Length: 198
Image 1 (spheres, rainbow, N blue to C red):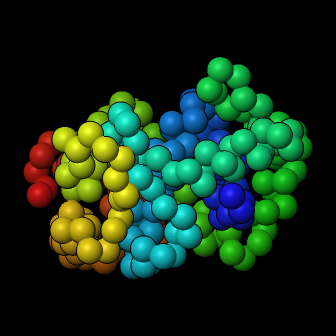
Image 2 (image 1 turned 90 degrees about the vertical axis):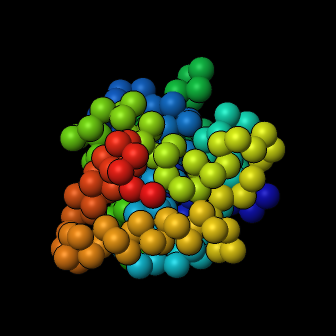
């Protein structure tokens, strides 16, 4: 499998950010926050193809990207991450690489979404963010399906519902906060958590 440079950057960026807030970072947390960042890019008007990698619903009903898993393995082999019993930490070499990569234009735009997804944890506990995200239309729609399923398929009705939620939220917030996506993210997650959006 060819390594996707976007996934590699996203993984190292998320580990760097989450490590500051959580300490050790579980691989599943990288998957979850990358998925949330992808959804925030959709809220911000990007297309499904913008994210450049795909997610499926895994066996436990969570978002999972094979490309993220491969990037974690690559970064671990290249001594940029240390993996210990499923938990990740960024190394000094990884930090040097992250700082270099973050200067590239192609990654600067992605930082907006990666930062917003992680910064939700400054205002809401991890468990609340996770539980609320599992109530978003796409994950909620596939929760009863035992098989793995592609997420974010343009022809899926739950994707259409997601876009409707984002359009309503954008109108309610009067188009504000495009530079500070934490506000729409937390508002949306809060409404999902309280089952007040549908």
